[in-house]
Image 1 (cartoon, one colour):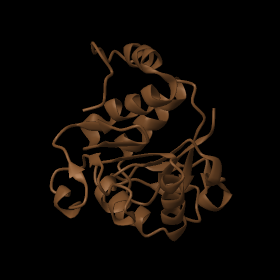
Image 2 (cartoon, rainbow, N blue to C red):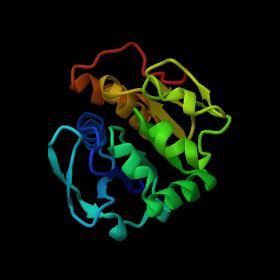
Image 3 (cartoon, one colour):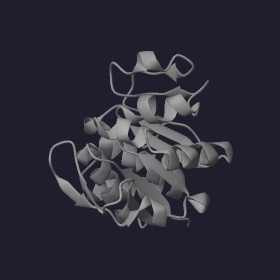
Image 4 (cartoon, one colour):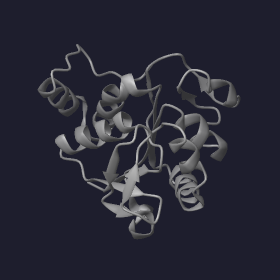
Length: 191
């Protein structure tokens, strides 16, 4: 299984980032957190410092399975302002790579790069108006073959399980979710 990367910028939404890290690692996926700053220590939107596994300059993003953008403000704006990350996301999308974004990140990070053009997606309420070339849905999670989006902190667990289901199958996602006392009849995230 290829390595995946979750990007941290000052002001990221802690629940969205750390829930994804926790769930993907519980599933046995190789996921590294990446600071887009010059410091491994990144401060979240609610003042929680997180120590990233690596700096963006150290990450080999060319062969990644997933590139993941948590939301939060100004975290999403800071992610969008990273030229290195923007180039990596565009190249990954053009190669058919898997990309996930939650909260403001679908609208603020992915949409300006053209990644959501003509595709179904969701985002934090109020940001959907910025995504005129996307088909925005008022739903917690939209999971396509290569793009997964979610609308905010309360859906972070469903978002993370959708990533696991995409990569490892619904059975693994069900097992991880059940172990966390998240019960559902189906992990079908394709709306």
